[in-house]
Length: 367
Image 1: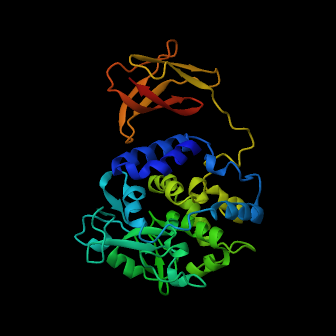
Image 2: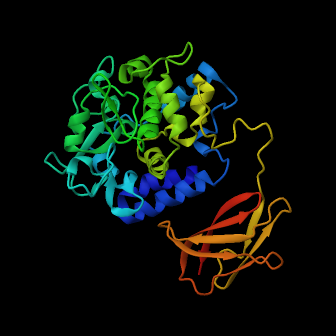
């Protein structure tokens, strides 16, 4: 995966927008690999650590990031990393929840080109509000870099909804986004996990400057600085498809990832609290199985044969385009284990093999 990132960091300026989308989809699929699979980004992190030791190790890792990325850069990156998975002409708006009530303020999605400062435009929301950091993050002009431009803390938001939130601290609630308690803000059921994992990133990267207590209201977990509120939100609201598509893009353009999106249970291991989803199987007592699957010939024009070990016997398959569109889904003949590709157009596709013990994702080239 590293060579893919290295190549396209150099070449991305020569690719159009839709070409970049294809690349990010490939990287996301091939790095996640279904099931318990750790992204190569963490290969040099000792994930057997716990508590403060793991926090320190992740802090060292994510501190290696671009120092030239600007607040202005995120405007175009929104179009890729915050693209609506169900409508590629729009971006998803944090805190949004209703596109049919006649009010722009509550919109969940917005046309990608409606960036601006007017009513029914979207702008850049600092989810960890700039003024709540200590010291503050400074002015947000398009040439600014550093903490104020960290794209892991920026999301598209309706202009007026952004103003409604302002610099209110996050507080517990339920339902849609809005004011709660004594001047606090609830991000909405759909967004509370996103917010929690962003706040965990900010605290891990910037330490006491972005203490969770500066941005949220609740008791802390044990003798740690993490809020029980954020740990609960992290467990209650699993990682979304939108979050998953942000990390590969930001690794490419910014140089780091949000670890708590890649595996929410890292928060549990560091700070305790309710057990979050474990996408890598770190808490499993049994060893993860790595299946040996081969495809031949590949490239091919008529038929691809599947060769696998006895521990993984695929029974069906799904073929996707590079845009993520499902092209075919069929049962695999167990005795023959062959896939007919004679009716497909030439190109690169993603093949998902599905069996009782797991799934495997492979790239195939059809000539």
